[in-house]
Amino acid sequence: MKIAILGMGTVGKGAYETAKTAGGIEVVRILARHEVEGYEHLNEIITSDIADIAGDKDIDLVIESIGGIHPAREYALECIKAGKHFVTPNKNLISACYDELKAAADESGAEIRFTATAGGGIPWLYNLRRTKRCDEIQEVRGIVNGTCNFILDSMCDKGSEFEDVLVLAQAMGYAEADPSADIEGTDTLRKTVISANLAFDADVKEEDVPCYGIDTISSRDIDYLKSMERAPRLMMNAAVNGNKLCVYVEPVAFPMTAMEASVKFNFNLITLNARDIGTQSFYGQGAGMMPTGQSVIQDVLDIRDGVNHTPASGEGVEKRKLKLDNKSAVHRYYLRCSEIGSEIEKIIETSEKKGDVYYCSTKPVSVIKMHEIAHKAKSDGKEMFIAALAE
Ligand code: HSE
Image (cartoon, rainbow, N blue to C red; front, side, top):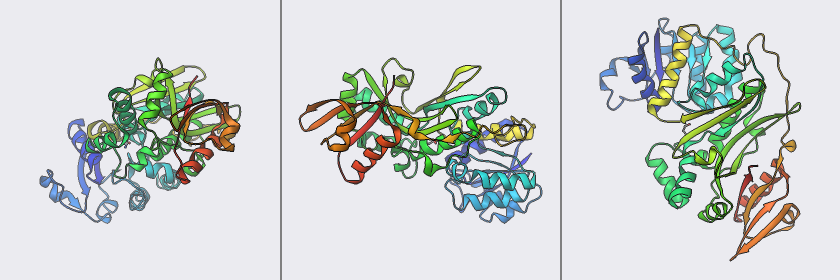
């Protein structure tokens, strides 16, 4: 099979290296703006013009690893419309533009695969897709951002300060180019949208998902949560509740005995619950050149070999018609703040003042309400951190 790679960043290089050893795949074109350092021997096949790839009838499949939406979306559409199969690790693109790409692919007869968009090197979406062929998914949840896990684990384990460990995560190459996507939860949000839409044949949009990250956490939260025998982790959550679907991203304070609390460094842990098989968890490297590159090439091999797990929107799949409703997601929270206004007063169950800081537990409160209060505090420049209290 002859393939092209758009973008020779970390994942593009990982895909190229894996393709060399996988056998039966030949990288015949690479889209890059400049010569790629360390890959000067590929200069002959490098082009900066997408038409050289979209217009080349010999190319069967295109890997897009440019990242972001533009020009990735335009290049993807050009290649898909030309009938080329399409594989990408680009979560921004799939979260925002999947329907458009899929419609183009249905018309041209191309296949689209995106296993590496959530869970990086973990075959999470592959197994989710496979499980739902003969089961009904009821919940998907997990730690899907390695940068945040690395930060939280280092703060808990080594007593590191947030800012110091974020710099370290950037230096180690885990963080996004703009790390606010990691710490504000946007990266987790995109992986949640992709996972939820696949799991539930839903049509969840990024803007409909409440999201609160870990950018307001401090070592005081870690210390207080430790005194409660808990550790925080940033979680994707998507679950069926009757005919409703709750989908949101937020920090969760887990009992130290929970599996999530023992996830170290930048590892991911993703879990599904299904009607017949019950709980299954997937653990491993959610990022990095070779894990993610290999996941991309596994998708390429599946397309080449005709392995098809009936896509979420494929024929024969009965739509569950679940309605997104985060008001029905209700639980208790840990909350740290510097002042207790009337909105907070209404929801707190217990509070303890230490110095000028209040440490509170809330009554059961809806995700929507809690996020609204926490985002308002952030935009008003007030101190606050929240974490759901896992049962
Ligand atoms: N910044 C992401 C993470 C990279 O830390 O998980 C993989 O998607």
